[in-house]
Amino acid sequence: MKKSYNYLLLFACVLFSFSNANAQISKAEIRATGLTCSMCSNAINKQLKSLPEAVDVATDLNTNTFTVTLKEGNTLSPKVFKEKVEKAGFFIGSLVLTTKAETIKQGAYVVVNNATSDNAEVQIQILDKGYVTEKEFKKLSKSFKNVETYASNNEDDFHIKIIN
Amino acid sequence: MKKIILLLFFLSFGLQAQIKVGDSMPTFTLKNASNEEVSNTSFKNKYVLVDFWASWCGPCRQGNKELVKLYKDSDPSKFEILGISVDTDLTKWKKAIEKDNIKFTQLIDPNGFDAKTALLFGVEALPNQYLFDKNGILIAINPTLEEIQNSIK
Image 1 (tube, each protein chain N blue to C red):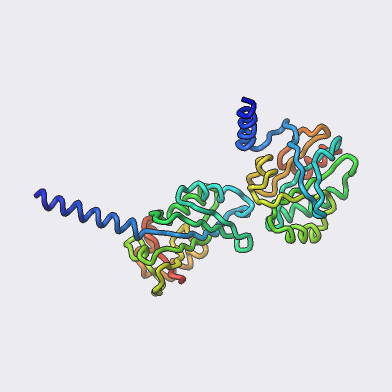
Image 2 (tube, each protein chain N blue to C red):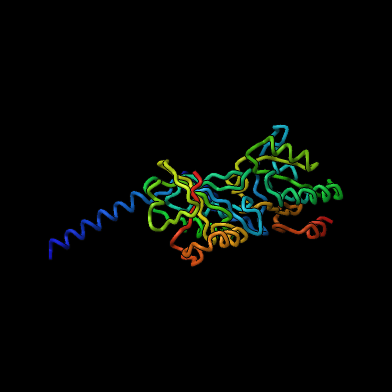
């Protein structure tokens, strides 16, 4: 009994360390939308900088994009960026993440564009509700009407498009 | 001891929130488009509208049109507009001044929301305007065009 318990513990440890090592987002590129000009407010910037995992927050005024560079080894969920942007009073127009290739092989990610990547780091776009504009979401809902999990809007799984 | 007091003084400055109606205008010196230093103390005994903006800020550029007109229709001996751009790209700033046909005082603090004057005033969003009376006392934050006109009459 004790032995099997030990094995279980070992198994849990291995599993835990695995999921930690693999769940890594190194960069998040966020385009925010809202009623007012997102770049004209310091709110999003402040929210993103408040993340302990954020190393740097840069803004590109030509593309209206906030780029967050993240600490190595973090276990952030894409959900964090949505929460931060919404806390600032805006919405996500698009969210592109650079992650380790292993990260998207986890259960939380569902690749919907049939693409694969051989790179060690992949660029993905999150396509779920709240991560694209309302208009785009309606369009995507039609395209993915056969993807059961897409319509269910579970906020802990992410439907992704591999870009690179 | 003196040093500690001085340090606390600067710390309190760093933590300062947005200036409030009734506060005196903070003093600052910034450069204009000709690279000359301009101090805001040179606008004594006039109403002064301090306008924070940037060339990439759409609503600010829209607002510039109104400010240009307001300035043209006002008495320069009584009223001055002090534009402060937080553009980091000076070329884009100068281009915007030219394009928007701005004739009032334009100064640059090229550091975005981290610009010293932006922190001094507590700027959190652009455009952001502060109207001071002849004694340099803040009488309105983000006043409407009408409010400005009524004040400086």
